[in-house]
Each structure stands twice: as C-alpha cells, then as structure tokens.
Amino acid sequence: QHQHHTTATPGKRTKHPQTMSRTLAATLFRIPAATSTATVTASMMRATAACRPAARALSHVSSWARFSGESRNNHAGMGGTSCAAVRRSMPLRRFTAAAAVVHSGQVKVAHILMDPADASRLDELYAQIVGETATLAELAALNSVCPSKANGGEIGWVSRGQTVGAFEDVAFTTPVGAVAKAATNFGVHIIQVLEVRELPPAPINVSVADLQEVLEGDLDEVQLIDVRESHEWDIANLGQFTLMPLSQMQTWAPDAADNLDLSKPTYVLCKAGIRSRQAATRLADLGFTDVRNVSGGIDAWAARIDPSMARY
Image (cartoon, rainbow, N blue to C red; front, side):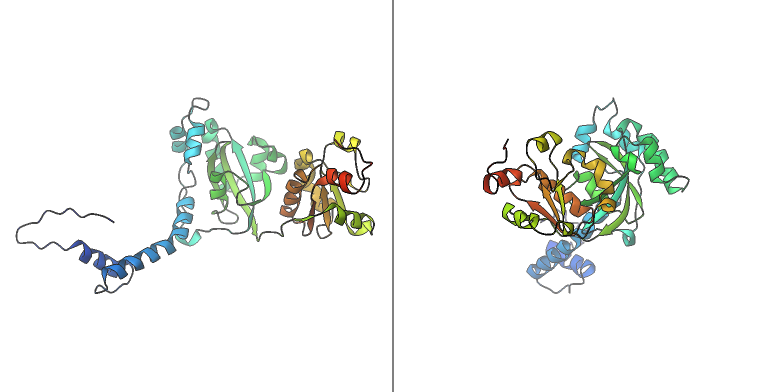
C-alpha cells in the first residue's frame, strides 16, 4: 500500500489515489475502471502472484554474472580481489523473454571453475566457447580447478538442492546447450547445460530380512554394492557384494553405467544405511532405475541375521 502525498495546484484537479489505482488496474490488468477498490486489489494481487515464477526466472537469466549475497561475503578479500572488481570484469548476458526457462526435474551440467582473481581469464574462455573456437570440455581440461576437469568439466545430473544456490539458479534457468556464468563460494564458473530430464525414481529402503531373501535367490538377477571402506570390509563383509567405496565414487561412478546394468535391482550396503543412502541416490541420478538401500546396513545384519559376524 502506497501513501500518496500530492500538492494541489490551483485550478487543477488531482485524481484520488483509489481512482488512480483503478485506472492503473484497467490499463495493466484489464480490469474495468468502475470496479470496486477491494475487487481491484484482489485481482491485482492474484495477477502479481501469478507472475512471480516467471519474474524469478527472468531475474536469474537476465544477468549471468549475478553474485549472491553469500558470494559477495565469501569473495571479498580473496586474493585482494573485491566482488565489485570481479563483477565489472564479467559483462552481462541477457536472454530474451522467449528464451527464459525454468527447468524441472534434473539438469546435466558441465562447468569450468576458476579463482575469482582469474575472472578476466574466464571472460576470454567464455568468448572462445561462444565464438565456437573451442569447446567447454577442451577448456575445462586445461583451465578448470575442479576435479571434474578430468571428465571435460562434466558434473553429471543435478537435482535442486544438491548444489549451492547461485550455481543452481543459473543451471536451472539456462537453456539446453547455452553457457552462462555464476559466482559461488567456490569461485567463478562457466556453466553449460547439456541435457534435462524428469526426476528418476527415488531409491527405496529394504530391510536386512529382505536382503536375506535376495541372497538366497538368483544372484544373477541383482547387483550388490558395498560402499564401505576396505578396512571395514576386512572386519566383516557379505561375500556376495562388490566393494565400491563411497569415498571413491567420483572415480568409479562415471563408468558405472557401462560396467553395471541400469535396469537390474541394485542393492547398496554400508555399515548403518547412511552412506549407502547417499550412494543409492547418486546411482539413481546416474540413471539406475531400481536402487535399493539396505536400512541399518551390515550392523543390522550382524544383529538380526548373523550374530556370529564381527561388529565394529
């Protein structure tokens, strides 16, 4: 609600604020000027609310050099480079309204990560990508400080909530095939959206009793992954499982789709069911369609199925 402070001019009539609101409503929202003030207010609020998602999307894509408040705080003073200096070196890229997107589900992204002090170099890399004189994958391998450089900068499939806000905002509002910039507490990025897809089926939890039935059946029909560390495996293990530590998942995950069957029921085990849940979620992100997390892990197996098994 805005209070209108006007100074009357002799011989000139000033419109009443309510009349002005109705006139504005008639112009912007196609509401008859004779409509009551209460109805006008309600209609304008509904229209404004309906526009908010699109407005948020446009606010994200209109400036691909956007810095969040978090980034401003984290970057200030890094290597003597202020956020304002980095922002000036990153010119704006604006999408048209028709190009604005808000992706649902998941996005497959690749990126180049650099220190904020190297923002001007990031500009040069961006120009090469847009000018099609080099690809993001080629430049990531040579310039990125992220371990993903070994995979051409590709991070893989990302869901909302899995990355920091400034990165997510850009990744989920950049058209497929396009590149954009972002700044996070990790540094400055060039982000490329490679693909989009619907959310994969979430992993389901199964009990150790369920697992016991599986192990007594046809093991060729399932895949069994233990994501504990090797020293834990040495203490206690179920020999039917394959040891694939969660700590090394960044190494083995890129080839998982080639080495394993995406459609087979895949059981994931750890000590208590927490790490296995993380790995199961990641496997679902990679395209595995039937992932099952063993609740309670091998500790629950020792307690309920095989009391002779060592516990730690």
